[in-house]
Image (cartoon, rainbow, N blue to C red; front, side, top):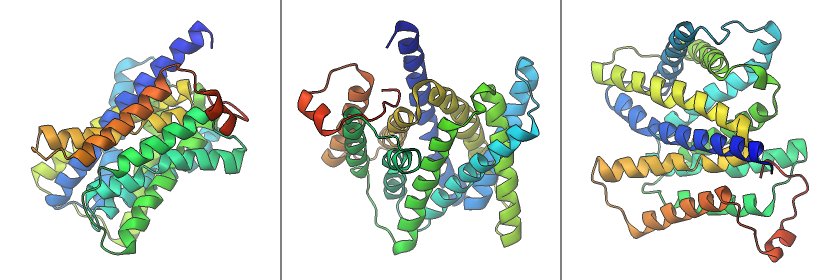
Length: 309
Protein backbone atom coordinates (compact mmCIF):
# COMPACT_ATOMS: atom_id res chain seq x y z
CA UNK A 1 0.00 0.00 0.00
CA UNK A 2 1.62 3.27 -1.07
CA UNK A 3 1.63 6.38 1.13
CA UNK A 4 -1.28 8.27 -0.52
CA UNK A 5 -3.51 5.18 -0.45
CA UNK A 6 -2.51 4.47 3.15
CA UNK A 7 -3.38 8.05 4.21
CA UNK A 8 -6.70 7.88 2.33
CA UNK A 9 -7.60 4.66 4.13
CA UNK A 10 -6.69 6.09 7.53
CA UNK A 11 -8.84 9.20 6.96
CA UNK A 12 -11.69 6.91 5.91
CA UNK A 13 -11.31 4.82 9.06
CA UNK A 14 -11.44 7.95 11.22
CA UNK A 15 -14.61 9.09 9.42
CA UNK A 16 -16.27 5.71 9.98
CA UNK A 17 -15.35 5.60 13.68
CA UNK A 18 -16.67 9.14 14.20
CA UNK A 19 -19.88 8.27 12.37
CA UNK A 20 -20.25 5.13 14.50
CA UNK A 21 -20.03 7.22 17.67
CA UNK A 22 -22.76 9.54 16.34
CA UNK A 23 -24.92 6.62 15.19
CA UNK A 24 -24.44 5.21 18.70
CA UNK A 25 -26.57 8.04 20.04
CA UNK A 26 -29.56 6.77 18.05
CA UNK A 27 -31.00 4.29 20.62
CA UNK A 28 -30.81 6.96 23.34
CA UNK A 29 -32.71 9.59 21.35
CA UNK A 30 -35.17 7.03 19.95
CA UNK A 31 -35.97 5.75 23.43
CA UNK A 32 -36.52 9.30 24.74
CA UNK A 33 -38.83 10.08 21.82
CA UNK A 34 -40.77 6.83 22.35
CA UNK A 35 -41.22 7.55 26.07
CA UNK A 36 -42.77 10.90 25.16
CA UNK A 37 -45.32 9.68 22.63
CA UNK A 38 -43.44 8.89 19.42
CA UNK A 39 -43.39 5.56 17.58
CA UNK A 40 -41.04 3.84 15.14
CA UNK A 41 -42.54 5.46 12.04
CA UNK A 42 -42.71 8.99 13.46
CA UNK A 43 -39.16 8.85 14.83
CA UNK A 44 -37.76 7.45 11.58
CA UNK A 45 -39.69 10.00 9.49
CA UNK A 46 -38.58 12.91 11.65
CA UNK A 47 -35.03 11.63 11.65
CA UNK A 48 -34.74 11.60 7.86
CA UNK A 49 -36.92 14.63 7.09
CA UNK A 50 -35.25 17.02 9.52
CA UNK A 51 -31.90 15.50 8.59
CA UNK A 52 -32.50 16.36 4.93
CA UNK A 53 -33.56 19.91 5.91
CA UNK A 54 -30.33 20.32 7.87
CA UNK A 55 -28.27 19.00 4.95
CA UNK A 56 -30.09 21.30 2.53
CA UNK A 57 -29.22 24.29 4.73
CA UNK A 58 -25.57 23.22 4.76
CA UNK A 59 -25.57 22.84 0.97
CA UNK A 60 -27.12 26.28 0.52
CA UNK A 61 -24.59 27.84 2.87
CA UNK A 62 -21.53 26.21 1.34
CA UNK A 63 -22.51 26.72 -2.32
CA UNK A 64 -19.62 24.50 -3.46
CA UNK A 65 -21.56 21.22 -3.68
CA UNK A 66 -24.12 20.75 -6.45
CA UNK A 67 -27.70 20.36 -5.29
CA UNK A 68 -29.07 18.84 -8.45
CA UNK A 69 -28.59 15.25 -9.57
CA UNK A 70 -29.58 13.53 -12.79
CA UNK A 71 -32.58 11.24 -13.16
CA UNK A 72 -30.19 8.36 -13.70
CA UNK A 73 -28.47 9.11 -10.40
CA UNK A 74 -31.84 9.37 -8.63
CA UNK A 75 -32.79 5.93 -9.91
CA UNK A 76 -29.54 4.56 -8.50
CA UNK A 77 -30.15 6.24 -5.14
CA UNK A 78 -33.71 4.87 -4.94
CA UNK A 79 -32.93 1.25 -3.89
CA UNK A 80 -30.33 2.52 -1.42
CA UNK A 81 -32.86 4.88 0.13
CA UNK A 82 -35.41 2.07 0.49
CA UNK A 83 -32.92 -0.09 2.37
CA UNK A 84 -31.77 2.85 4.46
CA UNK A 85 -35.38 3.83 5.30
CA UNK A 86 -36.46 0.31 6.27
CA UNK A 87 -33.51 -0.25 8.62
CA UNK A 88 -34.41 2.22 11.42
CA UNK A 89 -38.12 1.37 11.19
CA UNK A 90 -37.30 -2.29 11.85
CA UNK A 91 -34.78 -1.45 14.59
CA UNK A 92 -37.01 1.09 16.37
CA UNK A 93 -39.93 -1.35 16.19
CA UNK A 94 -37.79 -4.09 17.78
CA UNK A 95 -37.37 -1.87 20.86
CA UNK A 96 -41.04 -2.52 21.62
CA UNK A 97 -40.33 -6.24 22.01
CA UNK A 98 -36.93 -6.38 23.66
CA UNK A 99 -34.27 -4.51 25.54
CA UNK A 100 -32.43 -2.00 23.33
CA UNK A 101 -29.10 -3.66 24.19
CA UNK A 102 -30.27 -7.03 22.87
CA UNK A 103 -31.79 -5.40 19.78
CA UNK A 104 -28.52 -3.55 19.12
CA UNK A 105 -26.50 -6.75 19.50
CA UNK A 106 -28.72 -8.55 16.97
CA UNK A 107 -28.60 -5.58 14.60
CA UNK A 108 -24.82 -5.66 14.76
CA UNK A 109 -24.64 -8.99 13.06
CA UNK A 110 -24.54 -6.81 9.92
CA UNK A 111 -20.70 -6.81 9.57
CA UNK A 112 -20.87 -10.59 9.16
CA UNK A 113 -23.77 -10.18 6.74
CA UNK A 114 -21.72 -7.69 4.69
CA UNK A 115 -19.03 -10.36 4.30
CA UNK A 116 -21.68 -12.99 3.49
CA UNK A 117 -23.53 -10.85 0.93
CA UNK A 118 -20.26 -9.79 -0.71
CA UNK A 119 -19.32 -13.44 -1.13
CA UNK A 120 -22.76 -14.64 -2.28
CA UNK A 121 -23.68 -11.87 -4.71
CA UNK A 122 -20.32 -10.51 -5.85
CA UNK A 123 -18.00 -13.51 -5.32
CA UNK A 124 -15.71 -11.50 -3.02
CA UNK A 125 -14.25 -13.45 -0.13
CA UNK A 126 -12.74 -11.83 2.96
CA UNK A 127 -9.18 -12.32 4.07
CA UNK A 128 -8.14 -13.88 7.38
CA UNK A 129 -7.80 -10.58 9.23
CA UNK A 130 -11.34 -9.55 8.31
CA UNK A 131 -12.81 -12.90 9.34
CA UNK A 132 -11.12 -12.77 12.74
CA UNK A 133 -12.26 -9.17 13.28
CA UNK A 134 -15.83 -10.08 12.32
CA UNK A 135 -15.90 -12.93 14.85
CA UNK A 136 -14.33 -10.82 17.59
CA UNK A 137 -16.71 -7.93 16.92
CA UNK A 138 -19.79 -10.15 16.91
CA UNK A 139 -18.76 -11.92 20.11
CA UNK A 140 -17.97 -8.57 21.73
CA UNK A 141 -21.29 -6.93 20.86
CA UNK A 142 -23.17 -10.03 22.03
CA UNK A 143 -21.84 -9.37 25.54
CA UNK A 144 -23.69 -6.04 25.72
CA UNK A 145 -27.10 -7.71 25.94
CA UNK A 146 -29.01 -7.20 29.13
CA UNK A 147 -32.64 -7.94 28.33
CA UNK A 148 -34.94 -10.60 26.99
CA UNK A 149 -36.98 -10.77 23.83
CA UNK A 150 -40.76 -11.13 23.95
CA UNK A 151 -41.32 -13.86 21.39
CA UNK A 152 -39.88 -14.19 17.91
CA UNK A 153 -41.15 -10.86 16.57
CA UNK A 154 -38.47 -8.73 18.21
CA UNK A 155 -35.72 -11.14 17.19
CA UNK A 156 -36.89 -11.08 13.58
CA UNK A 157 -37.15 -7.28 13.47
CA UNK A 158 -33.68 -6.71 14.94
CA UNK A 159 -31.93 -9.26 12.70
CA UNK A 160 -33.85 -7.99 9.66
CA UNK A 161 -32.64 -4.45 10.40
CA UNK A 162 -29.08 -5.77 10.30
CA UNK A 163 -29.70 -7.54 6.99
CA UNK A 164 -31.18 -4.46 5.27
CA UNK A 165 -28.32 -2.29 6.53
CA UNK A 166 -25.74 -4.82 5.37
CA UNK A 167 -27.22 -4.85 1.86
CA UNK A 168 -27.25 -1.05 1.87
CA UNK A 169 -23.53 -0.98 2.71
CA UNK A 170 -22.65 -3.56 0.06
CA UNK A 171 -24.62 -1.81 -2.69
CA UNK A 172 -23.38 1.65 -1.71
CA UNK A 173 -19.79 0.44 -1.74
CA UNK A 174 -20.19 -0.97 -5.24
CA UNK A 175 -22.31 1.82 -6.73
CA UNK A 176 -21.13 4.37 -9.27
CA UNK A 177 -22.34 7.24 -7.07
CA UNK A 178 -18.90 7.93 -5.67
CA UNK A 179 -18.62 10.93 -8.01
CA UNK A 180 -21.43 12.68 -6.11
CA UNK A 181 -20.33 14.97 -3.26
CA UNK A 182 -20.97 13.36 0.12
CA UNK A 183 -23.39 16.05 1.31
CA UNK A 184 -25.39 15.90 -1.94
CA UNK A 185 -25.69 12.14 -1.70
CA UNK A 186 -26.63 12.28 1.98
CA UNK A 187 -29.32 14.91 1.28
CA UNK A 188 -31.07 12.98 -1.48
CA UNK A 189 -30.77 9.71 0.43
CA UNK A 190 -32.37 11.25 3.53
CA UNK A 191 -35.06 13.08 1.56
CA UNK A 192 -36.09 10.01 -0.42
CA UNK A 193 -36.05 7.84 2.70
CA UNK A 194 -38.34 10.31 4.49
CA UNK A 195 -40.77 10.31 1.54
CA UNK A 196 -40.87 6.51 1.48
CA UNK A 197 -41.48 6.25 5.22
CA UNK A 198 -44.16 8.95 5.07
CA UNK A 199 -46.01 7.12 2.29
CA UNK A 200 -46.01 3.75 4.07
CA UNK A 201 -46.82 5.22 7.49
CA UNK A 202 -49.68 7.33 6.10
CA UNK A 203 -51.09 4.27 4.32
CA UNK A 204 -50.98 2.33 7.59
CA UNK A 205 -52.21 5.27 9.67
CA UNK A 206 -49.16 4.86 11.90
CA UNK A 207 -47.98 8.45 12.21
CA UNK A 208 -48.52 10.41 15.41
CA UNK A 209 -47.67 14.07 15.92
CA UNK A 210 -49.08 14.59 19.42
CA UNK A 211 -45.61 14.86 20.89
CA UNK A 212 -44.22 17.09 23.62
CA UNK A 213 -41.15 19.28 23.33
CA UNK A 214 -38.88 16.57 24.71
CA UNK A 215 -39.91 14.14 21.98
CA UNK A 216 -39.42 16.73 19.23
CA UNK A 217 -36.04 17.66 20.70
CA UNK A 218 -34.96 14.01 20.69
CA UNK A 219 -36.11 13.61 17.07
CA UNK A 220 -34.20 16.75 16.04
CA UNK A 221 -31.10 15.38 17.76
CA UNK A 222 -31.61 12.13 15.87
CA UNK A 223 -31.83 14.09 12.62
CA UNK A 224 -28.75 16.25 13.08
CA UNK A 225 -26.29 14.01 14.89
CA UNK A 226 -27.38 10.41 14.20
CA UNK A 227 -28.47 11.05 10.60
CA UNK A 228 -27.08 14.06 8.72
CA UNK A 229 -23.59 14.21 10.22
CA UNK A 230 -23.24 10.47 10.80
CA UNK A 231 -24.47 9.57 7.32
CA UNK A 232 -22.14 12.02 5.58
CA UNK A 233 -19.13 10.81 7.57
CA UNK A 234 -19.98 7.15 6.96
CA UNK A 235 -20.32 7.64 3.22
CA UNK A 236 -17.00 9.46 3.09
CA UNK A 237 -15.33 6.76 5.14
CA UNK A 238 -16.81 3.90 3.13
CA UNK A 239 -15.60 5.43 -0.13
CA UNK A 240 -12.08 5.62 1.29
CA UNK A 241 -11.68 2.32 3.15
CA UNK A 242 -14.20 -0.11 1.63
CA UNK A 243 -17.44 -1.82 2.66
CA UNK A 244 -16.09 -4.64 4.82
CA UNK A 245 -13.63 -2.49 6.76
CA UNK A 246 -16.28 0.22 7.27
CA UNK A 247 -18.84 -2.30 8.55
CA UNK A 248 -16.34 -3.82 10.98
CA UNK A 249 -15.33 -0.43 12.38
CA UNK A 250 -19.01 0.37 12.89
CA UNK A 251 -18.89 -1.80 16.03
CA UNK A 252 -17.82 1.40 17.77
CA UNK A 253 -21.52 2.31 17.63
CA UNK A 254 -22.71 0.02 20.46
CA UNK A 255 -19.66 1.03 22.49
CA UNK A 256 -21.11 4.55 22.50
CA UNK A 257 -24.36 3.25 23.94
CA UNK A 258 -22.51 1.35 26.67
CA UNK A 259 -20.42 4.42 27.47
CA UNK A 260 -23.48 6.69 27.72
CA UNK A 261 -25.19 4.23 30.02
CA UNK A 262 -22.14 4.07 32.28
CA UNK A 263 -21.20 7.77 32.31
CA UNK A 264 -24.61 9.45 32.10
CA UNK A 265 -27.02 6.98 33.69
CA UNK A 266 -24.58 5.33 36.12
CA UNK A 267 -25.32 1.87 34.75
CA UNK A 268 -23.19 -0.94 36.09
CA UNK A 269 -20.18 -1.97 34.01
CA UNK A 270 -20.22 -5.72 34.47
CA UNK A 271 -17.29 -8.06 33.77
CA UNK A 272 -19.26 -9.43 30.82
CA UNK A 273 -19.69 -5.95 29.34
CA UNK A 274 -16.02 -5.18 29.95
CA UNK A 275 -15.07 -8.38 28.12
CA UNK A 276 -17.30 -7.35 25.22
CA UNK A 277 -15.64 -3.93 25.05
CA UNK A 278 -12.23 -5.62 25.04
CA UNK A 279 -13.25 -7.88 22.14
CA UNK A 280 -14.54 -4.96 20.06
CA UNK A 281 -11.44 -2.87 20.74
CA UNK A 282 -9.17 -5.82 19.97
CA UNK A 283 -10.97 -6.38 16.66
CA UNK A 284 -10.60 -2.69 15.78
CA UNK A 285 -6.90 -2.61 16.69
CA UNK A 286 -6.25 -5.76 14.68
CA UNK A 287 -8.07 -4.23 11.71
CA UNK A 288 -6.36 -0.83 11.94
CA UNK A 289 -2.77 -1.76 12.67
CA UNK A 290 -0.65 -3.26 9.86
CA UNK A 291 0.40 -6.25 11.96
CA UNK A 292 1.23 -9.40 9.94
CA UNK A 293 -0.96 -12.38 10.76
CA UNK A 294 0.59 -15.75 11.51
CA UNK A 295 1.21 -17.78 8.40
CA UNK A 296 -1.11 -20.50 9.64
CA UNK A 297 -4.05 -18.07 9.90
CA UNK A 298 -3.34 -16.67 6.46
CA UNK A 299 -3.37 -20.20 5.06
CA UNK A 300 -6.67 -21.02 6.74
CA UNK A 301 -8.45 -17.94 5.35
CA UNK A 302 -6.86 -17.19 1.97
CA UNK A 303 -7.85 -13.92 0.35
CA UNK A 304 -9.31 -14.68 -3.07
CA UNK A 305 -9.78 -10.99 -3.56
CA UNK A 306 -8.61 -8.33 -1.11
CA UNK A 307 -11.20 -5.80 -0.04
CA UNK A 308 -9.23 -2.70 0.94
CA UNK A 309 -7.40 -4.59 3.65
